[in-house]
Image 1 (cartoon, rainbow, N blue to C red):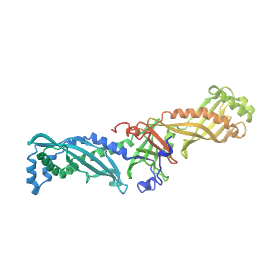
Image 2: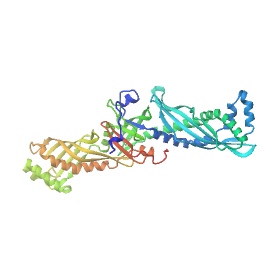
Image 3: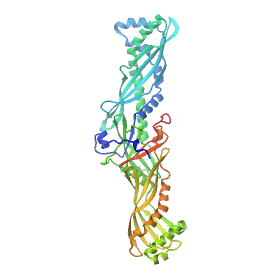
Image 4: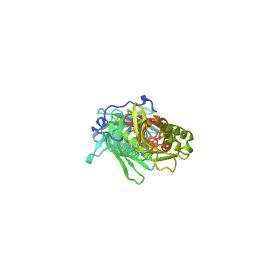
Length: 480
């Protein structure tokens, strides 16, 4: 389990903090700035942004930028230039910063380029070092029918982040010519950033956003059923992007068996100070996922064959109630266990338990039609969550029979608490191994790997299960 210091929980309702509503959604995928930076960086590579920079039409833009009374001067300078082009380019580390209102993000894309030009005056290529930065704003846009989405807009160069200098000092004549070329490039380069690079940044962002939405739609397998998330809306809270999700359970035939609506219960989101992203699932969604793995069922056990020592102890316990009934227990005695309702996850101070309603019957032989008695048991087990790679695992330990009710008896009335120890032993020996066997496949949280991380971690709150990467370090470049 993750350290309590791993998460600092925001107070208040999710909707009140993020979108001004009073209801909390079934799930939220929260993405910190590091994930956004890495995903957008990868998409810029996919869109060949470096090649765009290397193909910038510097010479023609310089001619367009200097018109009017300066056109003759420009022509006199440019007649000495045979060619001018970007010879090398790189995109430095992106920066993601919240704007003052905390509802928008500013993306900074720093660029480092070397441009060279040739002149008939000398055979040497004159190289210029160019540093410029593109910036754009990510915000939530509301369209028709109140549909909201993340968009990138206002892309331009960052003021005060333009530097052009001569890479190597040459002769006085060439240095003077280079200075004049630099003065012409200063107004031209920002225009090129806006006209040539900004469309690439916008396309890269749209691809990144589409990948994120597709990521949330990957179904989570729960034996024959699936848990599916539906994107509802985005929200920005300081430097974190939240994708607010609906959820539904779908059976093997594609029919929706349970639809999770917004709840009036609060859903506290973890701060992403210590982790790149989190998937927060409301407790009722987690309960439904566990229930899909453990549907109600009936178990029948020939106790004397499978657990002979337990069968002997059961006979001794029944003998205290009715010696006649104990003597009727044969080698084919049967214990029937029925789980009647879906297990319910209970969380208290970070510790999880699972509550179950169980019916247990004891038959003297395998031919008996009527049980000695029927007990209704309110049981709880320790719920141990752990992870294996990107699998979320669950295991039940230490079952306890908290309350036992005598529902029916063919051997007379008795206090069912007399059988508490042996009943608990039977449940621990029969029911728990059966349930843990069904839970052994785990629940795949594929978005952990898809976002570039090797393994998952988890944390519990009173109202949710929070899945995060086990390490804050990306294990491989993000790509889809």
